[in-house]
Length: 402
Image 1 (tube, rainbow, N blue to C red):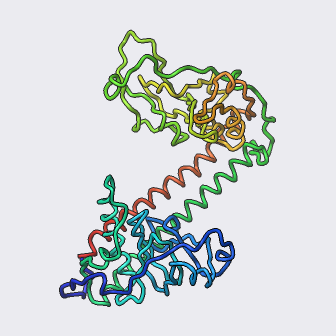
Image 2: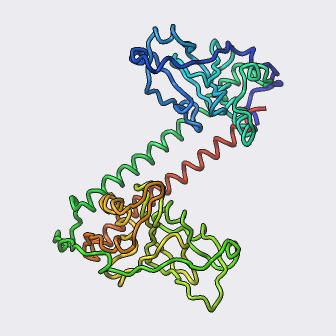
Image 3: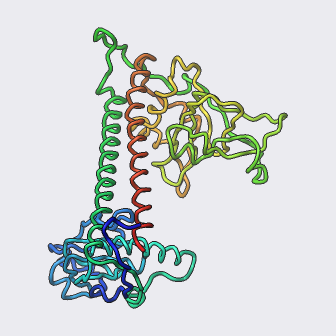
């Protein structure tokens, strides 16, 4: 794949011919004065694998720190290659900085630095994947320098770099749009469930005050699958898995597992409007995650590490409203208090049913649900667009480099 007007074969060169190579180092952490300077210093964790322009600079060192450690000032522009722990990460910086010993850095570039960064971002990922599952923890500077690559003339290098940068800029903007929407949803949700923001009925009339009730008064719980062994899974009827509940406030049926269930078994089946809760987690903050079934289903079951909660009436607790209520900041802060354990945390169904929640009228529930659902649908649409741009970038990276 070539841009119009560019001709001729790309030239094969050794990477070591295209710049000067240097490593990094870490100033002594015990000397706090070293870390109060103005020179940016980064480690591999500060890079974003999906964006070579994204460097999270939070630490700054002094000139004295550079003089008294193995780290070196890399004069911009510089290509930063993680060659040890985290091998495969790469960044391009137009700001001079220092790095940890996990880097091999290229300065005094004798080609378009941005072009070379994009080219290496594809080849370094391949190098990273080849180290997985082996004793190899990195690649040496000599190995990087001896790598053979093909590059076009400078004008084509610049054209390719500018074009991919445009896609990167759009991806960055798209991520910003999504983050702002997520922040908007979080802010509005907090105000709604703390009753700091209220919807009004027709003619600006107020809806009734929210009533406070225990969950046990609003519905009943039921258990997931019982009496199953690993041989029973993989074929048969659909069942909702733990991860489906943990990952999303809405059950995604296409991610269900399969389990064998005979006709004479006494197993609980799920139905539209049911809410599912996880009962164990690795941290207190992850206990009692919820998800709501918002599809009409036939014979579907629930995994044994969660339990179901069925409202007495969907005219009392709207299913879409439930999706947001049980993931709200105010409800989560109460449910976290139920976590018990030290290395693994568990939650009692009985204690959960004693929790008191504030519930608006069904009419206001529907308004709240529809409003938050609109924001969710917008976030989903923007994520879909982000995915399109990321696929487009991946295609270009795979096809623009010979």
